[in-house]
Amino acid sequence: HAKREGRNNAQFFMQALNDAACERLQLERQLRKGLANEEFVLYYQPQIDAGSGSIVGLEALIRWQSPELGFVPPASFIPFAEESGQIMLIDEWVVHAACRQVAAWLAQGIVPPRVAVNLSGCHFLKKSLVEMVAECLQNFALEGRHLEVELTEGVIMRDVEQATATLTELKAMGVTVSIDDFGTGYSSLSYLRRFPIDTLKIDRSFITGVTKDTDGAAITTAIISMATSMRLEIIAEGVETAEQMNFLLEHGCPVMQGYLFCRPVPPEEITRLLVEGLPMP
Ligand code: C2E
Ligand code: MG
Ligand code: MG
Ligand code: MG
Image (cartoon, rainbow, N blue to C red; front, top):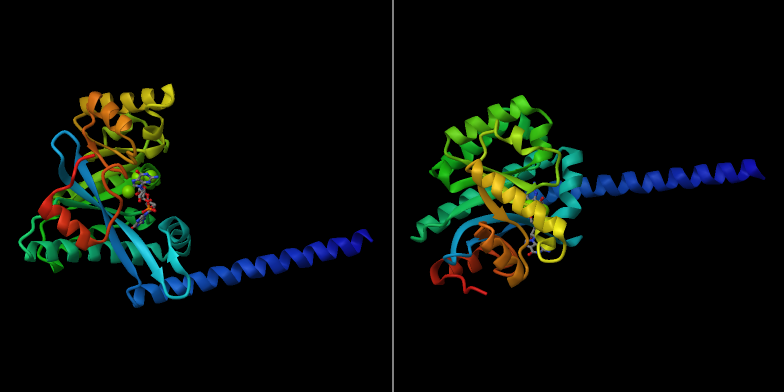
């Protein structure tokens, strides 16, 4: 009896494995098709100086509108693309699409603030990233200062030496660098000093806590004061309430991003906001 059950379990396991493998293969194929058919779009979320109300940056966030799968949020396919190696193609598409949009705004006589793109591939550690960014900028005759790259601590920590070299080259092109989800990785501010970075983005998990728990408030104020003394820019992510905004203003972090001000929206909506301004909450 035990033997039969064992075999059944094994069969069940093999079946599950097959389903998973099949699903992965499907998704890989869908992603490839999605890239070929331009099923991806970039939405943009404004970064606001809450002191003056001006839009100081835009974060490009990818959206996948798949005819077969429907609307797929980035959290559902970016980690998979990282594993399957397709992230390189996605990152390249994102940089290209962001540059194309900046060029389109400039052609309309609108000067956009710098656009931040999220890069998560470990190809960040390879030389090809610098070449890819340089090519995209050149393609649309853009200066590097129009672009910022957002990286997580984990990506940088994978190879500190190569990361330093890559960041230095990006900076030489005028591209700025920010650390995304800061505080959730394993980096210390002391090693960060060694990297040529411009901005720290305080992770939403701390911002959520600033008016609720003492930890969130303590970590946020610590990041702000250390970043300030290191002359780094700071952006607070995921600001949803006026209380959070006031806390950040009082503690010296005026630049913020979050649903309180604006959700990620299509580029046409950003065009309107850049012309008319963003109403303050
Ligand atoms: P992230 O870079 O930390 O982006 C912030 C996420 O928080 C975005 O989710 C944004 O829509 C959301 N968000 C912004 N303000 C608020 C707020 O006030 N409240 C809440 N609850 N959420 C807020 P999204 O667009 O779903 O992206 C999720 C993650 O997927 C991103 O986190 C980033 O890690 C990744 N991602 C997005 N676009 C790209 C991309 O083009 N390339 C790569 N490699 N990764 C991307
Ligand atoms: Mg980001
Ligand atoms: Mg983030
Ligand atoms: Mg985040």
